[in-house]
Length: 293
Ligand code: C2E
Ligand code: MG
Ligand code: MG
Ligand code: MG
Image 1 (cartoon, rainbow, N blue to C red):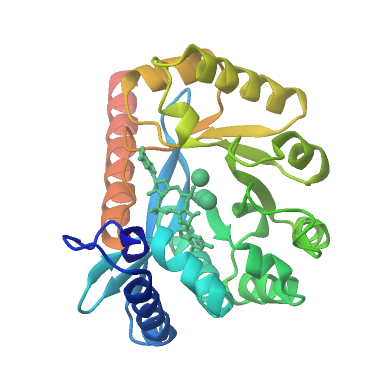
Image 2: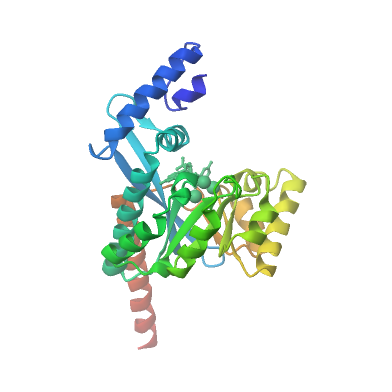
């Protein structure tokens, strides 16, 4: 039951199911006002090109800073937000905030970074999801081609009747679709066949075992090859050490995301990163032209 409280909350007592339920109820009611009270924040994790290691995109990840309990993991509060339906308004806030941010960074740094935003199954059931996304794109001015919506593979095609219709609609808006946590669901291949996905994100549970488990290595290698044969791009999640990078690069994975390159960053830290990159490139260009002269 202690897992209900999230791993960030230090638990020394055994918690009864009733206490856990009450805690969830309290969190749910608090979550109702969290966005309004400025307790929700987005962090952004860079995605890099596997060959050059240059930044090519980022994933927006939600954070909740509870005034008394401190940071609460999305693994804890996203399910609560889904149960209450709050994920619909929270998800819209995430989309609007992240798209506005990406558009602002494009304008200020002249960098066309792709933006990944996670969508919950509950959002994908909404009849007006497409209207919401279209409105956000219009309001923020972000190029739809830069927005990649991430759909986790654990969502059942049967349980979410609007899923395919909504994903095709998102494509018609010009957005991209990524299958998140690929390989962990029960129907990976069925998903790949039926979903209009532009790329897949190999789940970190496979990436973590590179160098440790030959079976998982074989799965990673086969997944990359299969994706490419189907004309899909591949991103590996949870790239933590050099040997993961070497393996993924040798096997032609397109893009990488993980602590080896960067943790999820606050807005300010992300801007520092972009500014630093700009300085380095300007310095290299100046060095080059000085060398030519
Ligand atoms: P995800 O979409 O698969 O996001 C990747 C998760 O892996 C993030 O966890 C990220 O911080 C973590 N990660 C990145 N690199 C590494 C690494 O090298 N090693 C390890 N161990 N972990 C790494 P986070 O931010 O805790 O998010 C957990 C999940 O919560 C996400 O998994 C996503 O399913 C969900 N989530 C987060 N933000 C949102 C959101 O705005 N909307 C929805 N619906 N779900 C969200
Ligand atoms: Mg994701
Ligand atoms: Mg996910
Ligand atoms: Mg994932």
